[in-house]
Length: 139
Image (tube, rainbow, N blue to C red; front, side):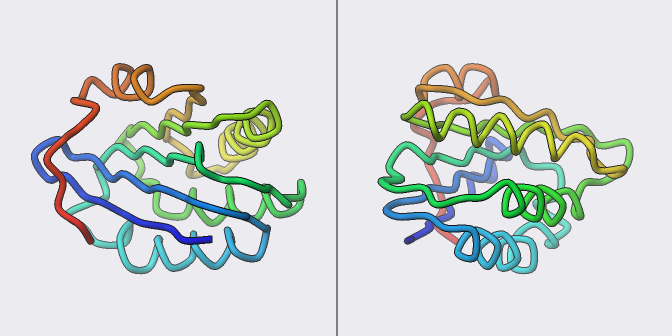
């Protein structure tokens, strides 16, 4: 499950692309690494995020996995600082899983991220009020 992160400092946006097969353990390891390497960096704490899952070919994600991922993700939310996360999906299964993630993430006592699920990139970028093809710096 290759994962690529691009950071656009001008737009204050972190774009993550996920490709291929996805499982609980891969997502859990990926979110732990992301939290450690990127989201714990003070410069990025107030950045909005896009996670593009439209190129995921096979999802083997459980409810327990989604609960774990959402708990880990909420750990870097900062009190008083609302940010947005757009999840882009391309299948009904992925849409349902992303909505479940959004719901579980909102249950965290620290959660203050507005999470929405989209079926296309243009709507996600429009919601974030940013250019769909920003000049990005790879991380």
